[in-house]
Length: 79
Image (cartoon, rainbow, N blue to C red; front, side, top):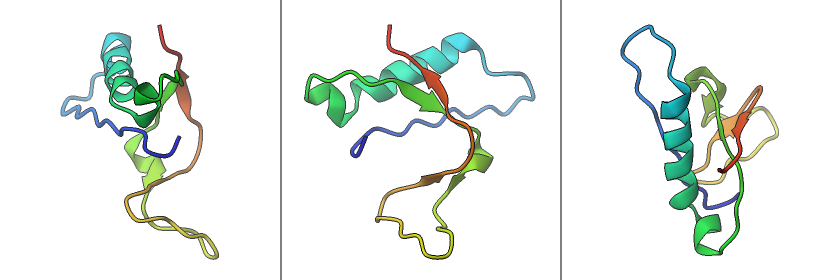
């Protein structure tokens, strides 16, 4: 959704990020989004850092402040 909050989880270790951490980050993103203010509930999703880009493909346009996500989105449904 346009106006959604972005959240970054920094993981300096090589350990997997726990599902609890992912759920907390998703909850934060949803509650700080434009959808939350409009009383709408959308699922959040997470991607790996390598999937995020600000560089468009040839013929694409990226609005200022937006990102391009390539690849699979891992959805976390609100609880």
